[in-house]
Amino acid sequence: MSARGLSIKPGSAARRRLKQGGGALLLALTALLGGCGGGGTTVTDSAPGGSGSKAWSWSLPANFPEPKVPADNPMSEAKVELGRRLFYDQRLSGNGKQSCSSCHLQEKAFTEGLAQAIGSTGELHPRSAQHLANVAYNATLTWANPSLVTLERQMETPLFGENPIEMGVNDGNKAEVLKRLADDADYAARFAASFAGDSTPVSWGNVIKAISAFQRTLISGNSRYDQYLQGRVLLSAAETRGMQLFFGEKAECFHCHGSFNFNDQILHAASRLVETPFHNTGLYNIDGKGGFPEPNRGVFELTAKPADMGMFRAPSLRNVEVTAPYMHDGSIATLDEVLRFYAAGGRVIASGPNAGDGRASPLKSDLVTLIDLSAQEQADIVAFLRTLTDHEFLSNPRHANPFTPK
Ligand code: HEC
Ligand code: HEC
Image 1 (cartoon, rainbow, N blue to C red):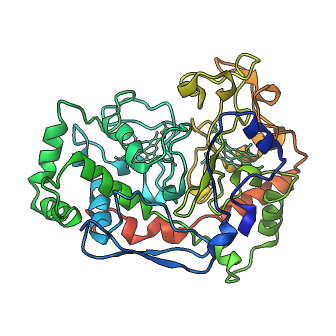
Image 2 (cartoon, helix red, strand yellow):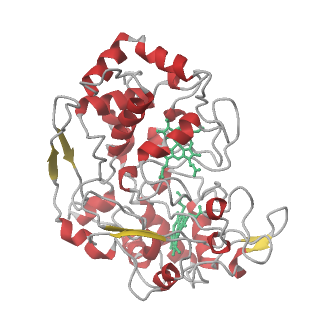
């Protein structure tokens, strides 16, 4: 699938929309994947700055480029293992009731199964927890935030955010939470080994670095589809028809979900210019002018620019079979329903506060239009999407909770 993936076709509607500045930022032009070479790459990264003793070695699926790693947070085995522990540790929340893994469950590709997440103090999050498969490659983080471009910065929101409260760490308990870790001899040793030379290894900065390093190892590229690309398995007739529709001009899915990671925002070690498009898919139209309900108005929440109304990042569709419910607010329950929504070219909500005809939204992407997809064709696309489930990833012991021995 080489060059098909990384960028939007020149001259396409999406490209035109990009030029109009429809919520997209042009950071840098991504090197085409085709140029990255394929075939089970193992890239060895030396870890400068004495961070961890062993050099890091990526073991990447065929055709996956090397992830970008910030210069001040090199990968190491010790750090990744420390980060895994912290990711699963409830002591990291203010009241000791939640860990990152409370909302990001491995068996669901690290999403949660809820339409809206619930924080440690019971506050309802307006949006659905995202899956974390291949999160290292996301050029921007979360559903609709063009300015959030590193895992390190993103983590400040679940840890310290107050609107809504997630982990509930604040000025009142920050020191206490760190002390819980520093007083634990195993943690003290792991922090010291991961951040050798640091005078106070147990710090918030290092907590964030370690969890980020762990998250960069959450690589998923061994689905049946990947095995098919490598010539190891065959797809069924229905899956093959679904694949052809997905990557074809009739269903148009690939324009926004066509990269090796089945999305359209990719960052990797050799990226030069990275495109970060956002899209309005016609899920809502509450005022006849394309309005989305507050506080889920997409990029608009940040920029207040009318053109950014309802603009969201296309999620990676890897493991999509296990990541329901779908969309930023979990408002679509099943993949069959997602396909009906796309075939109709938008969503009609008949009654209630969000009533409106999304099909008629003036802000909707040109790529989401009424498509003549039969029930069989919709089922075929769903069958193809189910080939993207990577069972090895969903049960990989290296990503699992270290505190509950399997
Ligand atoms: C209360 C549930 C909850 C907890 C706890 C939580 N998250 Fe999340 N996570 C979410 C939600 C909801 C989103 C989507 C946020 C948005 O779009 O505003 C998200 C998004 C993310 C993303 C962005 C993924 C992407 O594809 O861009 C990352 C990374 C992430 N979380 C990591 C973490 C880490 C690390 C922790 C622990 C420090 C954590 N989360 C704790 C609910 C949670
Ligand atoms: C114009 C770009 C675009 C096109 C074309 C497109 N999508 Fe999407 N897709 C998105 C965006 C953006 C979202 C998230 C929308 C939101 O949450 O508000 C999304 C969400 C999804 C989801 C939900 C994933 C999740 O984790 O919640 C699925 C499944 C999906 N798309 C499948 C498809 C299929 C199948 C096609 C082709 C029929 C398609 N998409 C065409 C942009 C697009």
